[in-house]
Length: 326
Ligand code: BTN
Image (tube, rainbow, N blue to C red):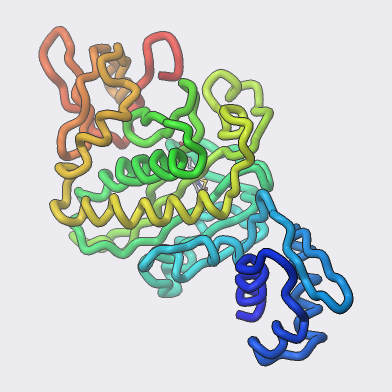
């Protein structure tokens, strides 16, 4: 695409790139180059245009566009088919629609805004326009359906690693898949799937990262945070999206080797915020408390109760701290 190529050339040049050079390298007219420059400026890039010198891109802190994600992506298969939308109901719904139309494994759907963002257990997901990363990854894994619940734990690890890589902030994971900064939730993950008999048709892993939200609705204030509330650094959402995609390839690759979490358990446990804390487990028919002792290789939470060790499966279960969100 000409737009991506022009952006790459501008980014790769410290000074000015002449209009002539852009035209020659890309085989397009001066008017076409100018039109693309205008589009890039509308996307938020600060581009200086000086007669007889050419174009110069000033450092852009957080431009979140399809081109920006494409130029930051260094993956083999995740996001190679990238769907970028200004607004959608829910990126999970969009990914499901694309899946039904035959979109390939690794399709990544990203939206600036969701007007019906979905959380777990039928809740809505607060997805302010432009202040977060709302994305869904479409997978067509050849794994038994009973292994699919582990994918959310894999995703939590990938997000935690990507946040650390891009911001230097070391997050934790609240089992099974909330990423936590300063004891509050910064990322939620919603995995949905379509199965046929014993076979998975497709899985959609939906990831919501609060990036620059500074005010949450009252009911979320005690439990939600954003990256901006935890650091002064400006986060580049395209870079973070690409880092999640790359980390996903890495952790998912390890998961596929064993079809369980054997190769990830150690890293997951290191980040598990519930570890050695008292937790309350709420299931549809039962509520009990105990001390969290980590996870097993199936991703189940180990809770030491007065009656012995219990293995808690994710799904309809909710795990809380005794006094607060964690
Ligand atoms: C949770 O309740 O913790 C899960 C929240 C998942 C939110 C993300 S945002 C992108 C994707 N699209 C949705 O509608 N939900 C997920």
